[in-house]
Image (cartoon, rainbow, N blue to C red; front, side, top):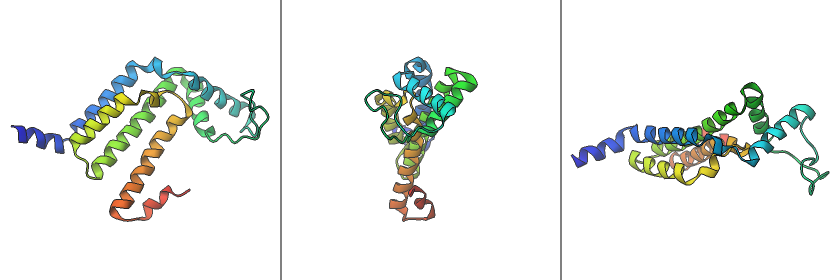
Length: 172
């Protein structure tokens, strides 16, 4: 019986699905807690870009006002602002949840494809969901989570299997 359970945990996609379900439930239940100060800054910056174009100087903060500035998060700010304009704050929460779940799914899938057991993927994924709630908050950086996970997967895959053409996708 014990070996059958172990075999099921090692080969079944159920643990990964369970981690995803737990993530969906936690993010849905704690949706209002995802809205923080950075959320409003992201939405306001997106509105500023729509109304005035990409900023060249800092105009938002007093200490940096007038300084030359490159807004590296402009695309994420535009996407979040666009979601807000299309369907309100709920759409922004849904977008954030989807980005976080995409990152978790990519991490779990890449772990499994690189040889991690289903059980270890479940345990690490479960604890990552519980340990990293600040990473779920709505802010422009959330859009980088799936990108970071994808780059990490490409690099680990390249290290393990040798550099292939797709490994070169990590280069700017």
